[in-house]
Image (cartoon, rainbow, N blue to C red; front, side, top):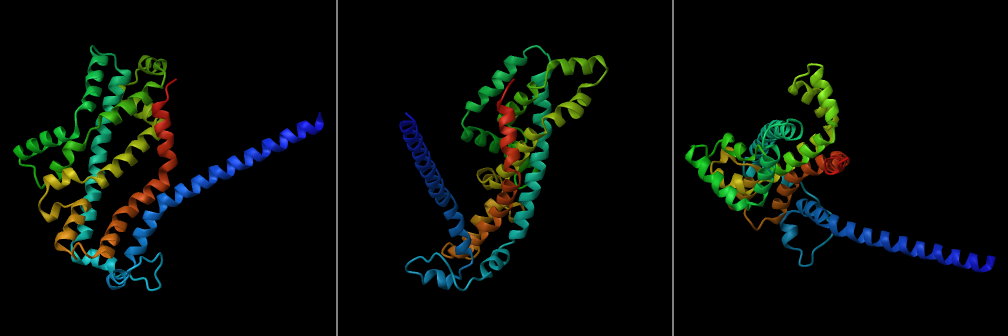
Length: 289
């Protein structure tokens, strides 16, 4: 009996080891597939144009790295200005959106007004409208208001998000209504309760929203491309196109890769620094009870 039990135990351990080896093997393969494009981008950015074009068979390393491509990125076009414009756009847009969605989420989660659920349902239904229709409407509106080639025109259509209102509203709803009622009995105003109680409790979700919005603004392409045609208001998304057309040309792939590295590096650092908070905020916002 003991011999059969030991045999079954050995078989079980062997299956577990095989399962673990297969799992980690697949994870390693998946990690290589995800990381390789970034490695290739960074590697190409340190190759000279001559060495890159002379490679009939692509090489996975370089013995003569150069930073000429990075210098050319900032000299061929005013790329530093594009980075500054993008930073201003991301900070102002995120700040404005944060104010709008926090107040909206608080109203839908804690204030008892007539038509609360109906208005929120209608608001959620707007998420079904294709983005292309929204872009067209916003473009016509901003053009009629003479806000093209202005930061205000760039920022206004992006200062709210139905999804983020929903996410924050669900998070605010997790705070018991009894706490809100007790605060009102003590004479606490709605804004004081919001800033002193709700926001500190729901900080992980708010941090998540901030990070995701900054990434969204940094990667924004269609709207800045439509609404700006003056170089002084270009964002990095416009800058890439400007580099290809009026900078060092489409054929200079190493310089293009250097520009992409410069644009991507802040987002990589931001995500790696706050990825735990992002996961925590999404989990808190999507879990009720």
